Length: 394
Image 1 (cartoon, rainbow, N blue to C red):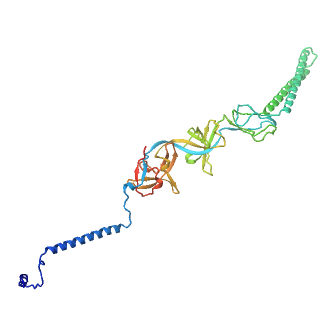
Image 2 (image 1 turned 180 degrees about the vertical axis):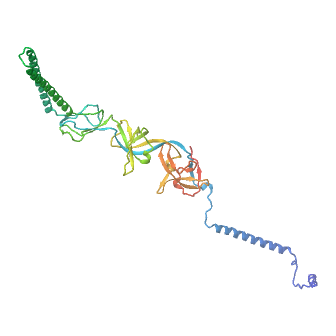
Image 3 (image 1 turned 90 degrees about the vertical axis):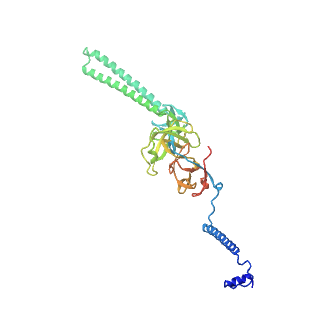
């Protein structure tokens, strides 16, 4: 029995075996500390794993360099001239149909063509008047006969007046000769009136221009027989003045009045013609709920009656945001734009388009001008997507 065994025995504890070093507490404390650290690390790992498991499959937010870059514009509010766009048909402002005024006859010649300018009273078609000329000559001869009878009646009356003083002719004979003289003078006037009537009829045989203007239609040829009541043979634009008959809705008609300026562009040409509204018709077509604004135009070869043209009519001023055409999109739900909110996320905004101006498209409803509107990348982003907005280069 060694010293350690004896010591424990004295304390009432039986210890057997080699106990050298077993009584030192330092190794036991180190072992416990190591165990605690291992369990702490395992718990931390489990906590991290649980965190990611709770997040599910949510992707990590993209880096700023990976965000879509979009150009944005704050349009503000601009004062622009209000405009109403419409389409319509070109026509002569005052179209004069010209037909047969007299009894008509066979056409001898037609000295004018379509597109030719004519003066007031200029002959458009010559009608055969051979028979009428003979009638006029006969009427002129009747005047001479009546005048001869009137001269004879006056001479007889003059002689009777000289003889009545001598008592050779009675007062009754003088009265009879006076009546004969008056009747002869009346027949002279009747013959003269008949002659002038024939002259007027003959003058109406030729078809003449009632006013100066441009010949739009010629519907007669030499050798053709025409008569009163037939369809018009010519059509003349008085003074060559033209107009556009623009079709507008009731709301647009209420915004304009006579005298406002307008710009007309005929189909097939890029030339713009200045005009002004000279009449807003007071009636509305009940079938399509549209009315007509008539825009007067000066003559130009490109303005052909019956042609189609577009018109922009001025309608005061408008204060509203103006956007380029690329910023506004449309689908089955209507017109809309994409804006970027304060969190740099894309938001769809429904808008209502106004008139198209040289500066862009007026946004009548949907924007107040302070929004950041996506200009050109709207078709490549989706609502709710995070983007990187940049201002376009000037």
